[in-house]
Amino acid sequence: MKNRPLYMISVVAEILGIHPQTLRQYERLGLINPSRTIGNTRLYSEDDIEQIKFILTLTKDLGVNLAGVEVVLNIKQQLEETQKQLDLLRDFIRKHADSFDMEHGDKGLVPLKNRDIIKVKIENEDE
Image (cartoon, rainbow, N blue to C red; front, side):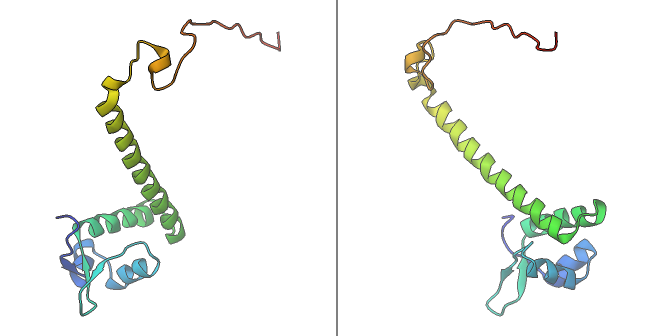
């Protein structure tokens, strides 16, 4: 339901205490992407409002310019995608963990030939 577009630009501007032109600028810069009705009216979802709040925190509270906001949003999106991939991998491993025989290194996820612990003494060159 958070993705369901419900709010017109004037309502969002009033909720967030900003001018509608600010929202239009964010859209022009690609920072937000509200849905559109058949009549081309912008409609914002709860997720859109959260995104705008994040942008406002960056700009007003942290002093980040809009170019910096774009970089932060791109990094945030990449991190979210990476997290989804990690979650999928974790789920796969949990689902198939019983098929991996961890007692025998040659049958595990990563075959291990020698399971002995080897201590290596590192000499300090400055001594």
